[in-house]
Image 1 (spheres, rainbow, N blue to C red):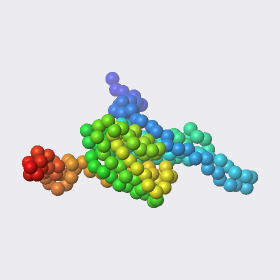
Image 2 (spheres, one colour; image 1 turned 120 degrees about the vertical axis):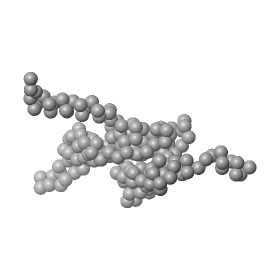
Image 3 (cartoon, rainbow, N blue to C red; image 1 turned 45 degrees about the vertical axis):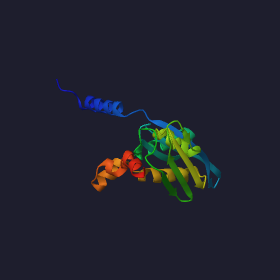
Image 4 (tube, rainbow, N blue to C red; image 1 turned 180 degrees about the vertical axis):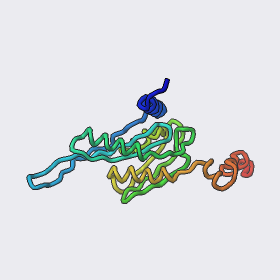
Length: 189
């Protein structure tokens, strides 16, 4: 018995939805914007959203519309399209300290020991919560514009590297990159 094309497409769509993990959506900000026209002003809304899976993938997007829910929907769709993978140490913190900048926004993100929590403000906190980072210390200098801060944090996060990635690029072993902690203490003693 042959199945119709419609049934095959429906099954394929269901599989795609099942494979996609539950995403964490964080609304960072909504601005009311005005367009001046002949009869007065037309008001619209601009939204910025951060989306992540809580396991090392995160994205950001913006959307504009005449109504708030539509602006948020557009921003969420844009964020899902712009997702990037960030390597995490033990699934809870960054591998190394990172600096990122975009325009006047400058961000410093530092890895932290277990139990520290997310020490970051506003837009950066939303990025780390969506990313799944549990321990990090972040400081923003320069502008406090959420758009520039999020783009600055993504600039740094995209450039972060895990020891495995560095070892693979150099053609070495991970232990050569990290070095043995025991040999370092014996050499000092």
